[in-house]
Length: 396
Image 1 (spheres, rainbow, N blue to C red):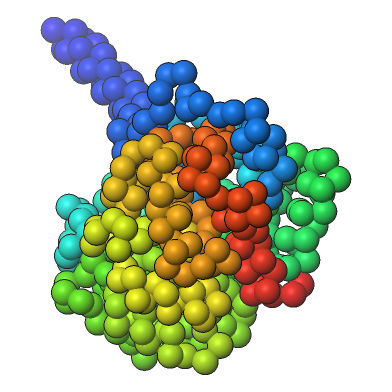
Image 2: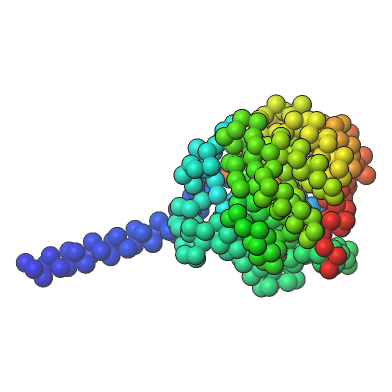
C-alpha cells in the first residue's frame, strides 16, 4: 500500500511539473495574442503599384515598439504581435525605437491610475522566467530588456545594429543606401521610474544604451505627474525630474512627453535647450481621447523643435483602418506643420492595430489617398524623425 501511494504521489508530481512547464511555455504567447491583436483583413489592405514603389524608396522610422516586453527573440519572425526584425525589414523600416516597459498598474486606464496599484509587469516577468534580479527591481527589469536587444544585435549585425550616436545612425543609413537590409535600433524607456529615484541610475541606463526616455507612464512617479495619474490634471515636474531632464539634455538623450501631465509638459518646455518629442499619440482636436494631450501643448512641443509621433491604435486616432491613421496624420500636419509629424505606432504595446510592420505600405497608400505629396509622405514616414535624431543624439 505504501509503495502504491508513493507511485501515485510521484505520478501526481510529474503531472504538476508538466502542467507548470506547459503553462510557462504557452501562457506568455496566449497573453500577448490577446493584448496585441492584429486587425488586418485576411487578404491584406490594398496597396497600388504606385504606393508600393514609393514605399520602397522611403527611409522609414517609428518612435515606439514594446516588443522587448514579450520575451521572444526579435530576430525570429513571430506568429503574434506586430514587430520583429524580419517583419520590420519587410516593411522597409530603417530605424525603430524599442522601448522597455517596466511597470503597468492593474486596471490601467486613460483617466486616473494609482502609483500604488498592483503591477501587471511583475507577474508577466515571473511567468516568462526572466532573470530573478528583474522580478522586483524596475531598474533591472529595464536592463534585462536592454541586454536582450544587445544580444540580438551582436548575433546578427548584418540585420540589426544599435544606434547610440549620430555616427551610428549615419552608418545604418549609409548601409541601407548601399543596398543592405539592416535595421537600426534605438533603445528607450517607457517612463523614468527605472531610475528608482536615483540620479546615478541615469548613467547606468545611458551606459546600457538607452537614448530615449519617457518621463512618466500611466502613473505619477518620482519625476512628476502623469497624464493618467492621481492628480486630475497631474503634478508638474519634480525637482528630481528637473535634474533628470537636465542630465538627459547634457547626454544627448531624447526626452519623451507622451504620457506626461499638462503641467509637466509646460515645465519641461520652459527648460532652456529642452527639445522633447511626443513619441506615440494622437491629436485631441481630431480625436477627443483623454490619451491625447491638449492641442496647444502639442503645438508648443513642435515649436521647441520636437516631433509628434502619431499612433496606430483606435484610442488615439478614433478608428481602426489605415485611413483613420492617415486622417490623424493630416490633422497633425494642420496643427504643427509637415516638418514635425512622424510615426509612433505603439506596436506591441497592448493595443490592436490594423497592420503589422511587414504591411506598413498600407499606410503609404492611405497617405496618398489623403492627397499628401511624395515629399510630405517622405517627411512623415521617417524623414522628420531621422533629422531630429541626427541633430539630437550624441555625436559619437
